[in-house]
Length: 512
View: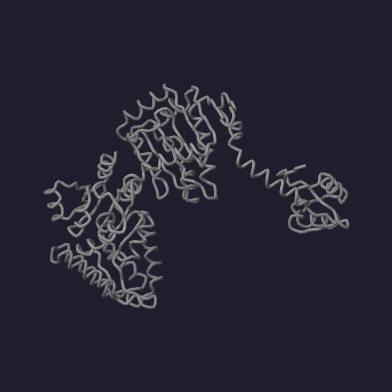
């Protein structure tokens, strides 16, 4: 016989719990522990009666009037849990609300829901269960007609994203639509683990969701498809969408929504390979400068002020750094002279300081300033680029600053200027200065030679002439907040240039 805990903290539960940790014990010992540790006012007779029943059920064994748990019973419980985990998808739908009909056809669940809202709730339950598995799992893959959940189920979508990050579940989503709503939803989801491609010819007959060897096919009725298209094609900006009206017209509408749920390892692997192929065909890259391109202005002066306030650098170094910036802005210094002297002065200012301490303070500085350091478009832009390929930062800033910023941006790789270190302290010297054009070219060649990229379909983003090595070597050069000389150069070659969020629309146009 297999017995389980009742979840009510009964005498039986207390006995089993005690004997799991301490055994063998007499009835008198068990009674004393229950009264002491579980604060239960239970009689000896009640404990004795329960122990005898557990012994009769073969949950407990006896030797010399002392009792211990039957290992066979524990093994049976383990097997039961394992079988339940493997087969739970066959029974979970029975507990879901909004099911009009459920048929078990061999290994296939054929479920008819009363509305799309009910079907989506059930799908999300299965999705969350899979994403939250701790054990090794295949990537979660889907092919859908439109992205929609973040609009009507924002809290649930946030929970799913939190679980994705917590359990590091890789997710690959193909979407047939590429409307404003689809792109808004895609940007909502995109992160290090969630990759999305919109405008793909998929999900013609049904939407597909693959979780391990579990396959879910969702058939959306024609009347709902038509309503979807009306909303998605007419909205030109996400702020125009009437969410309550959208939810009522699509999710609450009473109509039969059919879903098939089944397990098939071979078919699941085929769908997964097909989905992943869209992300592997073209190895695009996006190369970014940091200061002036993603970060407002140059980061070193603000961080130097922060360090000065913490007593980490002397006033004279801070004055020298500010003087360099002032002379550059008044056209008294050229960019390459300014950046070289700036990096040298900064390196001297932290000479003798521990690498760990400066790194910790850089993290604190960025955490305190947060998104105020970045342009409004920066995070969304990097997310978009993360969804289509590798993101690589090549910056003249020192590593500790770039790494701190990257905790917000989450790029795949960063190449930075490097400060010399000896015995875990800064020496005041420079090993590598990536603020200069020729050094950035060397860094770019290193990346290109060590990896295979389709540069014709890749992107680069920069703000000064020293970013030309990045911009000139890709098919999609985009200048952000360009200096006057780079703007002149960009216009001459008909490159794109942007100063605000409009760059995001340009990216959407290109990647569709």
